[in-house]
Length: 284
Ligand SMILES: C[S@@+](CC[C@H](N)C(=O)[O-])C[C@H]1O[C@@H](n2cnc3c(N)ncnc32)[C@H](O)[C@@H]1O
View 1 (cartoon, helix red, strand yellow):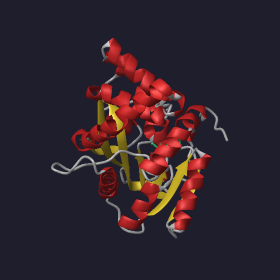
View 2: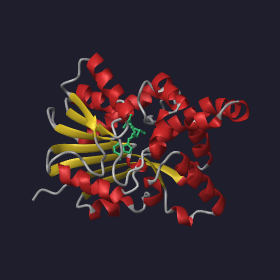
View 3: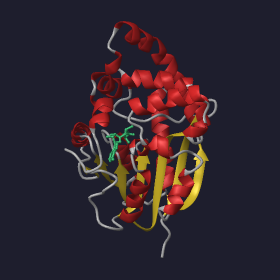
């Protein structure tokens, strides 16, 4: 399944290989996102941190029960189900990877949530929905993969009703990669290329609010949430540093790109932030 201008080879490699599938299903219980830890909480409780991050999303969406929400890049639908169960939202998830959508549908059917969470194939640069169909749109760690973030933001704006709300969560470079010293830049660029994080080369904490504005949004908040994400980052790094060394020396590193990414990303952590951007499509 291809889309004009969208090459799925990299995404299939990142999410389809054995190591990723194993990691996401066994370790992350099908969630494909980081976690949020409050000050004073233990950093080792990764599933709690993931639940708390989902709760942050639900609170930032700030929509009433029954509101229609688009999950742009839904993965296996963990976030969609959390929004439906904990916030009463009616969620439509789109993704470009057929095996993620199959998982999302299977898990929602198993949880008897097939009516409150609907999943279909869709590229967020070219959404299969009419204008103003949604009260809210969110992207949980997916915009990083976009080769054209401005186009994705324009699509989010189009499918939102006036007054609709957008929440973007995810890792982001602190500033333009071109301004980094060469060693850090080379490390980050090789990591972003391996992970098909094309969007992260284009937008960063300094320019995303401007891109949102150009797409027609009013930015309500650009929250630097790095202190809340750092405990998960540290815990994941501590868990996977040694396994990655073993794989690197004795195994097949190409099959364990996620292990590599968590370890390498830690090495350039001073250049990486996590943000929660909340924006509104102005009412006419
Ligand atoms: C890091 S995963 C996050 C999945 C989910 N949001 C979660 O938190 O569990 C990124 C997801 O974005 C999807 N994705 C990447 N580019 C996309 C696009 N252009 N349109 C829709 N989904 C996309 C990937 O297939 C993948 O499922």
